[in-house]
Length: 114
Image 1 (spheres, one colour):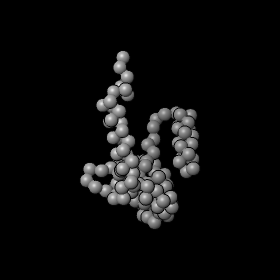
Image 2 (tube, one colour):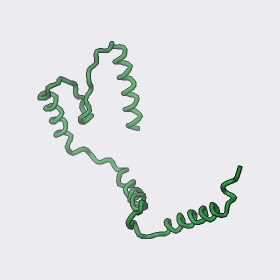
Image 3 (cartoon, one colour):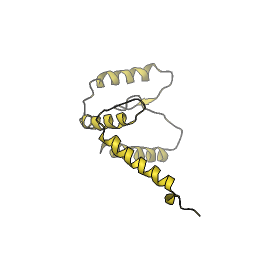
Image 4 (cartoon, one colour):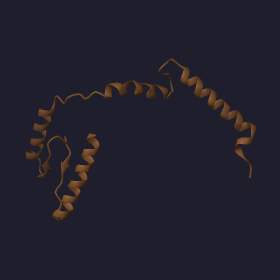
């Protein structure tokens, strides 16, 4: 069996790849046509902004909209406060199964809040 890394063609290719990566990291322009570097650098910029929690200014409007959706919709369903448009659909399962699902969902919420 032939070792791919020993061929001179592959060695030259890997040298070019390494040189290109170094040159791309030195560039000061954020974007040029066909480049994905713009997205990565912009993503790095926005991480600091996303660290701050912005209070939800439309919470009252969202609660009112959820309530109206529940009362005016053709299917009755429960809407839980603070979940936006996420609805809990009632199933015909036993209470023990429902309680198990509630426990699992509560654990997921706790993990997301951390």
